[in-house]
Length: 152
Figure 1: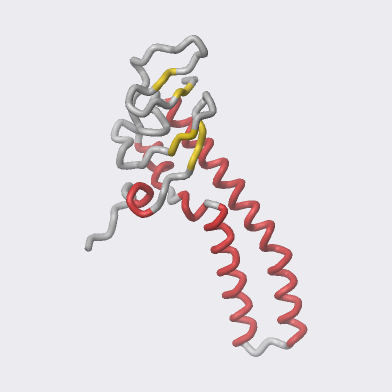
Figure 2: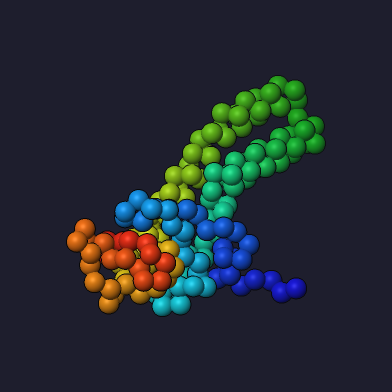
């Protein structure tokens, strides 16, 4: 079995993160493999594995990091007071780390959305919206997937 390339990771192993089009209908972020007309910068943004920036990934990585740090304290022969202090510090820092990762993910999703639209591509499927006429509400409806987007 071959290892997937960097542009296959989201589409093959993980579900792309959800978003809503400009009419409020649910859509999925385009996979890097489907965005063949995208610029290298956009492909790099899309190649970020957004699963690890999801709320579940943020909690899992923070808990794992905290447990690893506590294991180091335990196996290094640290005193009981240091273990208690370390536990309190990690318990206090964990929610902040999780919130930071979730905020970073939201910022990354907004950046991908802005970049797709600035390049004239549908953020849901990667189809070019350049020749598609505007609807009365200012949105361009993607003929490929039906998502509606306002281009900048």
